[in-house]
Length: 395
Ligand SMILES: Nc1ncnc2c1ncn2[C@@H]1O[C@H](COP(=O)(O)OP(=O)(O)OP(=O)(O)O)[C@@H](O)[C@H]1O
Ligand SMILES: [Mg+2]
Image 1 (cartoon, rainbow, N blue to C red):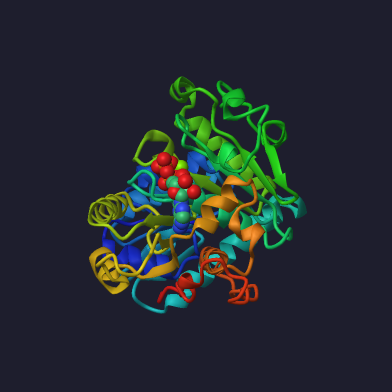
Image 2 (cartoon, rainbow, N blue to C red):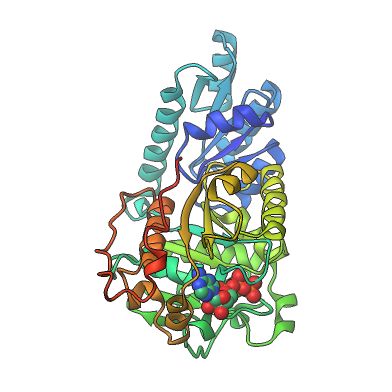
C-alpha cells in the first residue's frame, strides 16, 4: 500500500486521510526506502513537506532508475516553477500542495496506481489481499476467539478467500481451537526466506472450510526462534497474492513476530476487556503504535466480554483509550462451546448477537456496508442477556 514520508504527526494524519485505506507513514526517506525494499508491489511514495527538497529529489532520482513502477508524489507547503522544473528532471510524477485541495493528493495517488497497473500489464492489475492483525498486549482476552470468528465473518459465506495465520509462534492455538490437525505449519517454511511463494505456502495450509484456510503455528515452542521477521513478512506478502484477506492472530506482546505483522498490516483489531489492568496495557500499546506509526487511522477496537455490571462503561473505555469502540461481544458460553466444537459461533449461529458483532467488525475492517444476518429469535437464543450488545464505531 502507498507509503508517506512525513515527520509531523498532524500532517501525517491529514495526508493519510487523502490516501487509500491501508497507506502507511514513516518518518524518514531511509525508512521509506527500506519499506520499498520489502514491498515489491508498492506503487507510490508521497514525500511530505518535512522532507527537504534535496533529499526528496535524490529519492525520486534513485527510484526513477531502480523502481520505475513506483511514482513519487512531492507534497510541498508551496512551490514555484523552479521547484517544478527540478522535480520534473528528478522524475517526480506529481507535485501537490499540503493543506490545499485534498483531492489533489488523492488523484495523484490514483494516477500512480493507473500507471503501475499499465506498466505491470494485465496480469499485474490483480487486487492484492489485505492483512488484518488482531492484537492485544494482554493474554487471555479473546484474541484467538476473535481472530477465528472475524476470519469466518470475512469469508462472507464462501465468497472471499481468507487465510488465518497463527503468529503466536510459541503457544499458538488456532488449530486446536478450530479442531484442525495440521500436518504442516509455518515451521516447514523456516529457512525459505529467499524462495517462499504462494505455491509453496499452499502446501503448508490447513483447510477449515471452503474459503478459510489456516497457517498453523509450530507444534513446539522452541521453533519460534527460527521463524525470522524477514520470513514472516515474506509469508504475509506471498499470501496477499492468493487471498482476499489475511487475518493474523498474535501473542500477547510486542515480540518480533507481532511487530512484523503490525508493520505489514493494513488494518489492526485491538482486543480489550472491561478491566483496569487490560485497559492500562491497551492504552500503553496504542501509544507505542502511535510512536511507530502503526495502522494510524486503521484501528478497530473490539471489546470482548463486554458485560454489564462490571463497573466500567463503554463511554469510559472510549475516553480512556481515545478511540471509538467498533464492536462489543458479551461473555457467552455459546462462544466458547461453539469454538470448542470446531464450529465457531459465526458459522454455528450466524444470528447470535456475538456473530452479528463479528459481522460488524468485519464490515469495519473491510470498509464495506454491513450485511448482518437475521437475529436468532429470542426463544432460540441461548444468551438473551447479550441482545443489543454490539454497535458500530463512530468513525
Ligand atoms: N466472549 C466470550 N465469551 C465466553 N468465552 C470467551 C469469550 N471470549 C473468549 N472466551 C474464552 O476465553 C478463553 C480465552 O480466549 P482466547 O484463547 O481467545 O484468548 P487469547 O487472547 O487468544 O489468549 P492467549 O493470550 O493465551 O493467546 C477461551 O477459552 C475462549 O473460549
Ligand atoms: Mg490466543
